[in-house]
Every structure is written in C-alpha cells, then in structure tokens.
Image (tube, rainbow, N blue to C red; front, top):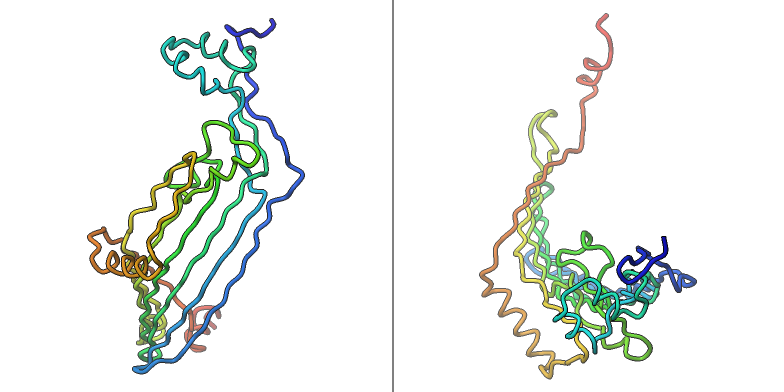
Length: 259
C-alpha cells in the first residue's frame, strides 16, 4: 500500500554528514604552592573545545509560517499536508555538526595533618557552551536542548548558548581518615564528602545571543557572595575502602592447611 498524507511512511532516523569524526582539543595549566600552616594551594585552568559532535536535526517539520494555522486545525492530516513531504512523517537526521566549549578554574586547598588525616576543599568556577548539549534525554539532567527548527549556514551560530549541563559553581569539602589499630582494623579509609548543590544554569536556544555587560571582577565578587550566602541543599557522601595488609603469621594461619 502506498503512503499518503493520511497514511504517511515512518522513516525513524537518517544519517548525514558523518565524514568528520568527533574531535576534542584539551589544554590546561596549573600551579601548586606550599602555604603556611602546612596548607597546599593548587590552582588549575582547564579548557577544551569539541568539534563535529553528533547533532540531531528535525526534518519534515511544519514550516514556522504555517504553524499557527496547523495548530488551529489540530489534526494529523493538517499537519501532514503542511509538511514539506506530506507522505512522510517527521523524522530525525543525525549529523556531526555540533560543537562545544568548556573553561574552568579549579582552586584546591588541602592539609595533611599527619599520616592518617587529610582535609581538602575544592572550588570550581566554570562555563560550558554548546549548540546542542546532547542527543539523548538520559545523558543530561535537563534533557536535550536541540533546536526545534533547523538552523542552517551562518545562522547556526544563533544556537550557541549555555549548555543545559552547565553548572557555574561547584564546591567540594572532603576528609580522608585512615584507621589505626590491629591488622583487621588497620588501614580503613573513611572519606566523607560534602557537596552544596548549586542551581544549574538556565539555557535558551534563542534567535539572538545576549552578552552580559558585567565586568569580570563583579562576576567574581557575585560568585563568592552566592557561594557563602547560599541556601542551597547539601549532598553528603560517605565512602569506605581498605588497603589490605595481612601479617605474615595471620596469612599463614588463613591460607596454609593445618598440619
């Protein structure tokens, strides 16, 4: 039976522009310095730029000029008749045309009190930008953020916006304690971690990109003000691990058969 607007053919997905393999460029620089009170300060800048990322485009969608009329009709037949190819349902084309940028400043302060106790804190101030955060809903907390309508040629730059996985502030507070005692209790590593949950950045694939006129020092001041005046919830994590060191005599009793 042939396809028609009342019985369109379902294409599912198509692949196009797959000749370029995804590429990620990474760079970083860091310094480490010993501070008074046995503190260690480490400052790192991390950046990466990705090209030819997998990107899903919607094809055979109702043209924007006809969207209002199709919405008023509110029928599948009206939707199909207004589509560029009425005999086909809407389908997805996968192309390697996406890109992304990430820049992050990481500051870590740690102190090794003795051979059994260490405390560290880590703060990350970062920005993630892209033109389509992911092609799968399950791989990002806020789902996909691809354009509803195809944006081709030089206008593709208008899809460039904060990622829906962008988190500007990340703070971690952690401690590592190694237990003393007899061999069966010794060398257990107890590691509590506290992570304040900051709100994820909002994203908007709009037709224009707006840059903030706020100065860099103002942004940094606002970041620390938000950090120390944050009423956001805390996430706790407690982990246990052990480095096994069994005495020779105990190992002989465990692994050797009784004579």
